[in-house]
Length: 192
Image (tube, rainbow, N blue to C red; front, side, top):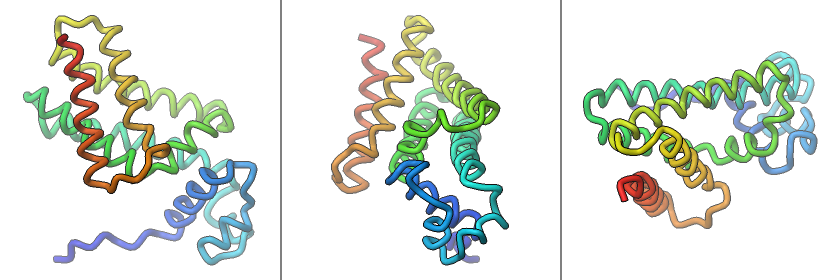
């Protein structure tokens, strides 16, 4: 049995390059010809895969929100009954996202307002559900702390973890370790 990941589809390649280019130069600073050239097809060839740049942006931002929520739910289910284990797993999963998908963090920060209203609302809805996973776990670990304070702590940890596009390179292992310690420390401060 092979453990190699399947090669990305052409659609996945297009999305990956679009995310990279949009993050580097902004949504309006990139044309379909540039995205096509980055994956070895003509700009107009992209229209066989996407209706346009707006559709790519929507799929990127809705898609990552869906993946974070689905992954978070899976992690909660896997470690059910062990709130410390659930929190550790959520932190690890978000660190993986933050280190592996830096372009999507930048893209979200800069371009969310460019989505159609329905897509923007969907992203926000998915994000709220993801936040609630974290809030429930942290409240279980810190029942003496009010919900509002826990919610602020969760958002603060997201801010910390999502700062990865702006971090100097320490190497992946060192960065993972540092982010993990900082996130756990932030939640530990709720007890103080």
